[in-house]
Amino acid sequence: MAWSTYLFSALLAMTTPTHAAPPRHWTVIVGGATADTSIYANAFFPQAIEIGVGDTVTWTFEGFHNVAFLGGGAAPPFAVPEGDKMYWNPLIFFPAGDPSYDGTGYHNSGVPGPDGRLSYTLTFPKPGRYSYICGIHSGMRGTVIVTDKAKGTPAAALKRGRAEQATTLAAGRARFAKLHVEHHGTTFVVPLVGNSRQRYSVLRFTREPLVVPRGSTVTWTMRDTFEIHTVTFTSGEKPAQFVVPEPQSSGPPKLLLNPTALTPTTTTQYEGTGYVNSGMLFPPGNPKLPSSFSLTFTTAGRFEYWCLIHADVGQRGIIVVR
Ligand SMILES: [Cu+2]
Picture 1 (cartoon, rainbow, N blue to C red):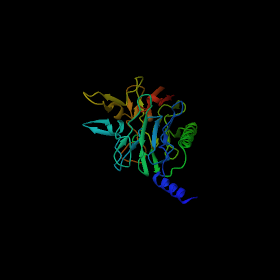
Picture 2 (picture 1 turned 180 degrees about the horizontal axis):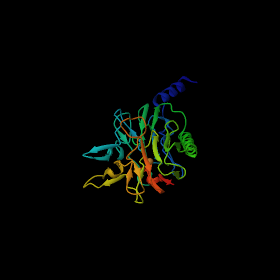
Picture 3 (picture 1 turned 90 degrees about the vertical axis):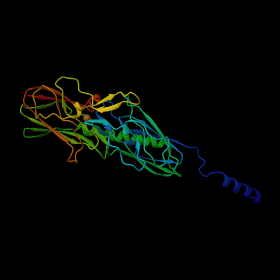
Picture 4 (picture 1 turned 120 degrees about the vertical axis):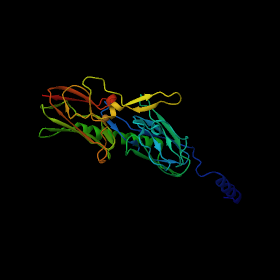
């Protein structure tokens, strides 16, 4: 090579950025459910994604979640008190932050509308390892790794995400298929199940109507780290809405957590009439929060009950007392 040509190539190399590749666009799936809505995936797919500096990620929602980058701050609680009422935290419900994330500032997608659809896009200008959460499902988290030498392609990452999602939903289906009510003497235990490692929740009480002899006690017990449920007998009334929008004179509505749904009733027996509610049942492990509920059935009949939080996706149970 002639010196002049060499010099020219060297100069060209110096003036051409080494990361001249155009920004790429990656996709992460948020959640997912089986077609019958019995199994929900509480995860981001793929859980970790490696992208290039300056690339963008779009989160495509397939369930009721949010995507929140905390910017070093604390995770906002999902509900906030106001007087004696509880409201859905606007920090979770509504979008926040600019369309670029460098590890600082709270960035939030907000939540999808009634159709469950939403997409949220962020650009990542700085190398780093950025974790993010869903503020609704505790323990649901993902990671974006931004590097100047990203391996893989957006198509391969999306394929991996779909495969992870399919594995999660299959694990949930398998769990639901062998969901059994436990029976100890006159007590029947209905487990509310999910799995934080396989990242699913089962949004059903039992596979079949639960048949119990008169005088039996049924205990519903939380064995799910992600979800919150209620056990609510309405005696034929339509189940109450969990969230009630309160329109404001300006700005978005406030979202009241319906006191009827939140407040437990005090009865320990159900005779087929009136309103009987567990209130919110939380994941086990926090002694300050209830995670089980028991009722004794004294009257023969066929009784319907609901989870008020998941009634719209079909979380309804039947107890037949003989
Ligand atoms: Cu539920």
